[in-house]
Amino acid sequence: MMIDSSKYLQLLREMIATPSISFEEEAVAQVIGRFLQKEGIAYSVQNGNILALNRHFDPAKKTLALDAHIDTVPPAASYTRNPFDPGQDEEIIYGLGSNDDGASVVSMIAAFSYYYNKVLPINLMLILSREEERSGCDGTQWLFTDGFLAQSPDFPLPDWVIIGEPTGMKVATSERGLLVIDGYAQGVSGHAAREEGVNALYKAVEDIAALRAYQFEKLSPKMGKVKLNVTQIEAGTAHNVIPDSCHFVVDIRPTEAYSNEEILNQLQAFCQSELKARNLKNRSSATREGSLLLKTVEELGWECFSSPTTSDWIRISSDAIKMGPGDSRRSHQADEYIKVSEIEDGIEKYIRFIDKFYGDIME
Image (tube, rainbow, N blue to C red; front, side, top):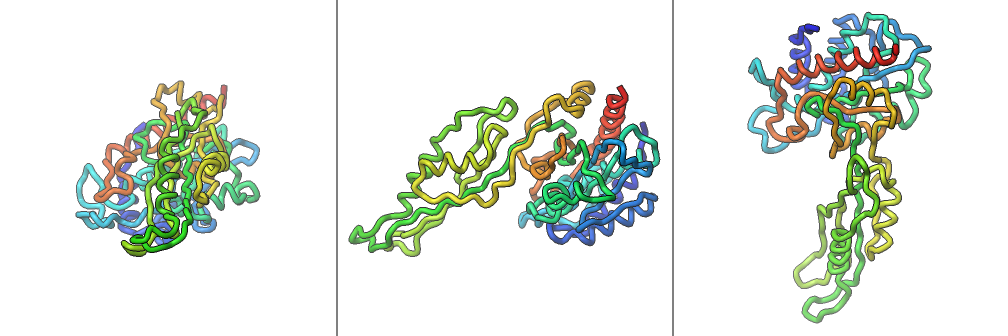
């Protein structure tokens, strides 16, 4: 099929020119809303999230949702360009959020628009959510985890979700979770010259060495081992004072082999320091065995992989995969950009996938 991408590329440029840092997405939601209205697409804003259903929505049918996020991280200090200027290049669109996640947003809007007026064997739903970059409570957590979609009389909890993130349109069928742990070692202060006190820093260093050496026994068939890194440490007030406390941070990327609670308990069992999880909800995710999504991917012959990065998938209870235009390595980097050809490829492949998925439904 041939889709005129020009209006979707222009929408992305307007989105980039409208700052949409997490918790400040209202202006960009208005930009998107005006576009949808101009295209004749009925939509609703729920707690700052944009929701739309195909024109011939039938509550008796199952629902496939296209989900992408409209917020961005703050611009990196090392930008050499204006992060809110998409530029004039005909082949590349620059700017904050161009790759993550604007390209997925406009590609999904294009695919949704393509099907909007068609009578479909299942429903198609568009979800453009907020606060993804900061794990906020008013985005997909509110929609899925807190139960808005399960309880809403107007919008269904989707049976399947395609999560739009920059994967080069490769299909992520699993995704690591995120568990951040703060370690607190306690000691007794004293004068360094007299070797008084109990050095909390030494306690922390012993725990850090033990954490570094620790190997989780269970391996994930898709993701391999749980990844653990100590990324921050702070202690002490002066060169001649034995520190009575030390704080360190552990970044853990779980697999489905362990719950976050299990990981925390295993590590606390051999650490002297008190370990506190910042959030136990950012679980790992995987497409369900026997999923129709997997069947469609296999029939299309598309490449699958396990994603090392987290997304809204950690809060989505529905069966899901993750794929979108762009390159994850550009995300959160200075001078972010997306190629026009990547967006055009994203639109075309979303439509190919949905066509095949609907065909499999009918079998």
